[in-house]
Length: 139
Ligand code: ATP
Ligand code: MG
Image 1 (tube, protein in one colour):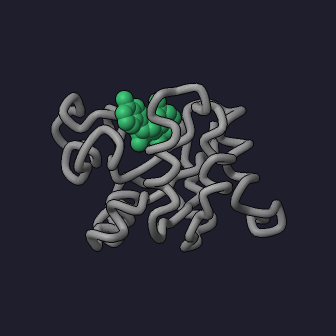
Image 2: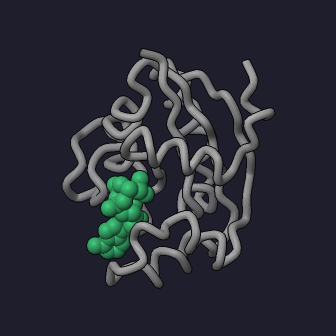
């Protein structure tokens, strides 16, 4: 079933000029880019995006990182897009990520890990709506 997921090229990867390589991977893996925009999140916007993690010990550091510089947000579409994009990214911690995954190749650390992907249909719907209006996603 065709599905959409929210992907982010995080500030660490944009700062190291890896956006092109990551977008190339997106296309090579067969995702359609349905929407894409460069953003500079405020601290409050980063906190709103990662609100599910507000009780976690890394929340303050994670949200400071996400607000530290430009990022690129994308809506990716493919059959089984949520699972497919998470599998392309690899494990959260690059030290545990499989060979051939984006995080294995590009992530600096468990926090500065190059990309984000939604983890379920309900979070994908929230995250896509956080950055894009419905009228931007009309086929
Ligand atoms: P994402 O939601 O960004 O796609 P994920 O689903 O693999 O990543 P989550 O558990 O949702 O992982 O964590 C969200 C983000 O918080 C991670 O991608 C990473 O940037 C950061 N993070 C997660 N665990 C830690 C940790 N133990 N220490 C520091 N940062 C962490
Ligand atoms: Mg997550």
